[in-house]
Image (cartoon, rainbow, N blue to C red; front, side):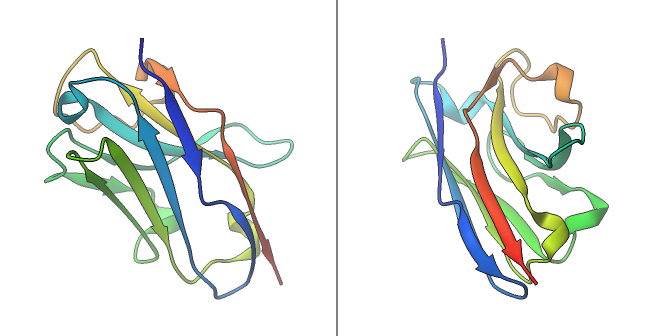
Length: 126
């Protein structure tokens, strides 16, 4: 069983920045493929970014490329999402997720993840 706890959400003006964190339990965090997803009201949960277990490989959705950066600190069992140049359309609940089945790959499909956090709200005002 893996527990994921997100933090760092909040209210920010358009053009501002936030950094989300996701603290994970487990002694083999460095083997988990990790990702960030978001869900806006009335919409499906969508992929934002993913990183391999080592952190050397990352992938971002087109909608956030050049603005968001996913990273991880395996010594701290923590995943991050640095969000810059935020837009009102980035408003959503952000979730981190872990794929513990196949280590050290990039996972973009929602259904492939095994564990999810409870989410943290990000609101961007115009």
